[in-house]
Image (tube, rainbow, N blue to C red; front, side):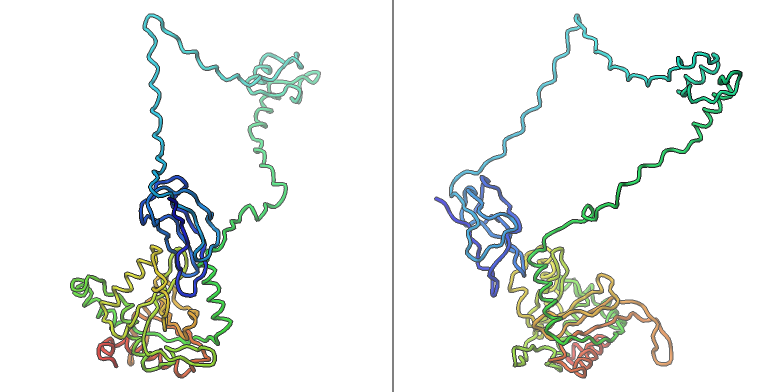
Length: 415
């Protein structure tokens, strides 16, 4: 019995995918639920598993081909045994040595033929001492300048020719006939569906939104001290490391409640205010930037947020994110600081109206009261859609985030 391999339902608004890789070849044995191939959509990569055990009978769609939902990828012959790699042939036994009574002498390898010595027959009048120098140094007798009687070459002429040959510069390598073609130094690779989708969404944000960025800086002294004080106890109790991201998420939730426009979006001629707080956390992966979403952050504690961020980041790096992990965010946080970025202007993640950019923590001299002190400072950037959010609201939001981070007790007291 033959079972067809079909493209599964890919998720909301996703109608096609690209066959990225086949894990099996025709004839290979297949176990139930074993991954057969990987499909890449414009949001995530997902595996197609075998719905029956047997042998991969055929592959209908090659790698790199775009397919729609329900398309036939191949077929499995149920119950059939797959091919097994043939064992490598045993090495042939070494030939037995010849009997001692009949030794066979190995033929010596032929010695390389010496380079032919210059002939001196053309100038038989050379003196024996001159002829010896010519032969030993492989000189051309006809090229010797004779300074002796009747124009004969002397020993001094031969020695002078030897010295001239030794001091002559090595011949320069031949210059290339023309400029090297640039095509020889280029590599052309087709964009993945995920990279295409990233490009489309970023360009959509630039073309659609009236995007503007406002900046501020935050003194991380108190936050770093709180984290250093409690991180060991936190990890021991909750089994998760205490990072900075959970503080930023909770600070943003407080600010979003105060400035609801930042948590809304434009839908046609309507403005949609969202009274829930699903925060997207941008993650860089080898395949590109993805933004998994932590749901209902206003109802979660620090430990739950840290665990979810850690789990989503691991799934993103392993290519295991599901579509549900990526959909429905209301606000996004992007941490370019982990790559060393000191300042940037993040691009909106449509249809959201704002995104917060975190950056590198760097010691800088600042005025504290009447004194100059060295403090760990971080620049914050809020990019926002000016159609939805006015400058006053954007600045107020960013100041509220700054206040919560500089005084973490505000987060605990929801101030």
